[in-house]
Image (tube, rainbow, N blue to C red; front, side):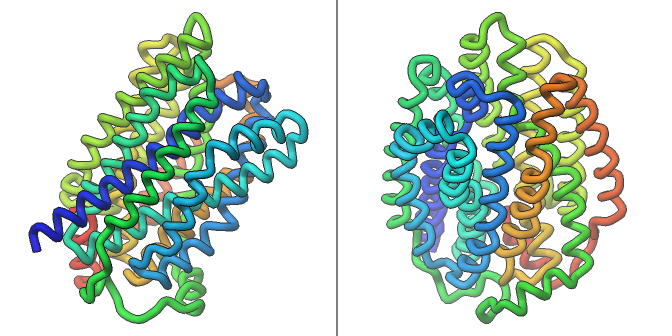
Length: 410
């Protein structure tokens, strides 16, 4: 049993590692690629992000329901792997030419591919591994830290390669996409042990979520805190690079700093379950939200490369606590059979709704007010929503759900 648990852990870890390698090679410097390589304005970059979010918004509910019905079967993940393997040729021969010649068409086509491969897929993979972990006694946070390591490793390389030729990063993304497919064969088969709840998920189960007050209370936190933070983070690399003597130097240092940040993040993934177990899921969500607000406000106040680098590293503390806390909160408060659906709809889909609506206006805000003043405004709004969430998020769960939550990353 111990060997099986170790095998389940390492296969889950390496699957996360290869997925985030691929995603990072494509998207860790995506804003710089849009701005410096393609020459898009802040507003146009916002349109691209908004279109990506809209596509993910449409696909995520489908992915969530499909994966809840599949349970721990891997058919959907193999489809993701095929799309990942083709990402290099897509970016080089389809996406870039379309954005340069037919901007809106390129944004739509790229958004569909991005959502199917990464934007909607990441939540599907995380929900799959979390459910598989409950069957094989694998803590989600400790497996997910390898995703952070994968992102860090790719970003460390991507910054230098970007200055040589961005296409090199896309080629490496395809190679690691093939590695992801191979990892799927290593993942263990599902056991007969239940992973929380019994019976197949039906449409009525999904619809019933929207009649629950606790679902909408969680959504206020997601849309008012986490979503706005992600919009803030979209074009942060552009602002970061602008604080250096040359864009090339800023690109290079951003790659190095992002790698350092994600290595710290990986270490935090290891300890985040213990933190959230000690303070509780609600307090974990509030703590991660407080770190988000501090980073946003600080970004509007500092003006030198060293200070902005320290602000960037705060992300390494916030994300692990958020990921562990959100799964624990879901498993504690809702039917565990619907964990993938709730995570994708209640967290990722609502994130994409807000991103779709606000990415372009916020991008225009950057053009009009500048990054610093825009960050102060966004940070203030997040702080207000965080205070509201303190009163809305629930702090207790039934004893049954508490037992299930203890199996999620802790």
